[in-house]
Structure formats: C-alpha cells, structure tokens
Amino acid sequence: MKSDLPPCVAMFFKAHSELVSALIDDCEASQRDSSQLKFTMDGKLIGDIGEWIAIRHFGMKLEGTNRKGVDGKIGEEDVEIKATLRGDGVAFRYLSPEHRSPRLLVFHISPDGCNFETIYDGPQDHAVNNLYKRWDSGEVKKSTQCMVRLSELSAKQDELN
Image (cartoon, rainbow, N blue to C red; front, side, top):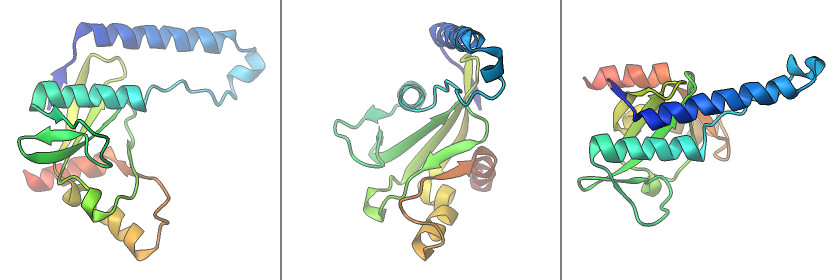
C-alpha cells in the first residue's frame, strides 16, 4: 500500500540530493569515481520518519522510555518500526525473546520523499523467524547485525493476507 508524505518531506529529500551532488562535484575527478562517500540518510532520521508514519497512519503511541525492540504501542500491542530508503532491506540486531515486539511495521520511503509503501505489517516472529533460527543455532553470531530483504518481507506479508 503506497501513501503520500507531506510536501515538506519531498522538499527536504530534494535539498539532500542537491547537497550530495554538490559535495561529490567538489571532489577531485579522480576521487569521484571511487568515492566511498554515499551520504545516505538511513538511520535515525529515516527511523524517526518511519515512527511518524506509524503515528500518523497506524495510530501508534510513542513509548516514553527507550525499550530495546519497542518503538511504541498500537492499541495495547508493542510494535517495532523499521524504515528505509534503500530498496534492498532493513537491518535487525539480535534481541532476546522478552525484548522482541509482537508486531513489526516495515516501510519503504521513496528516494524522492514523496510517498512510502508499507512492506510488512504483522507478527515480528513470522517476519524474521529464519533470522532468529540462524542466530540461535550459532550459524551467525548474535552480535552480528543482519539484513532482511524487502522482497522477503513482502512475501511474508503475502502469506498473512
């Protein structure tokens, strides 16, 4: 499901794009092609926009404390929010079972900031159970942050529908 974001968000994304272009143009030509500088906005800012989406479109109430794995509540249910600009996936860190929210919302925000798509809205365990199996079996260290592809989350959403 795609929904529009306020025009001010798109204006911010456009300004960010112009800033990145100016910074890259400022690099010497020899460095431009091999530059590791990406200037991505994923992280706290995009996470906050994801939480705003959850508040505005899903009625989420922010959690007053910094509880691991819990961004807020929808009704009486704890929920974790993931948001990204990238089309590949979202990152997860290992959380012990008592810290995992029962519900997970994942949003993909368009690179121009004009709209977002809800990729997944459902039980977190259903969405990332394979990832936790890998951590719990020792196949992947619990200290390793792991990516779950948006296509996998979309397929998991289809299983629920």
